[in-house]
Image (cartoon, rainbow, N blue to C red; front, side, top):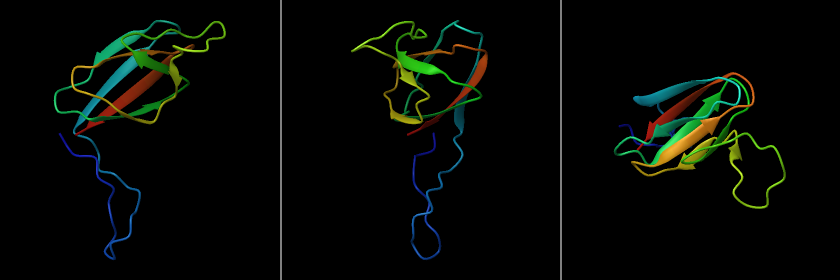
Length: 104
């Protein structure tokens, strides 16, 4: 698994670029139908991208239907710290494709 490192240019300045991951997963979601993914061994970070809005939570996720002060899923997370073996729940209110790139 590739480590998450910010690239630098030839002068040592940060470029905010990261390498392509060699460990990626995809979930093709139907509206309101949640799916899960288990974080692979050696992963420490998950980078999410999607074709439409999606929610992520620990173990399972549901599209919010009312106010919640705690326990709400995250909407369109980008980069998150994870641990190998964690189970993430992913759901979308409309059909969407979500790609998760894992880094050590």
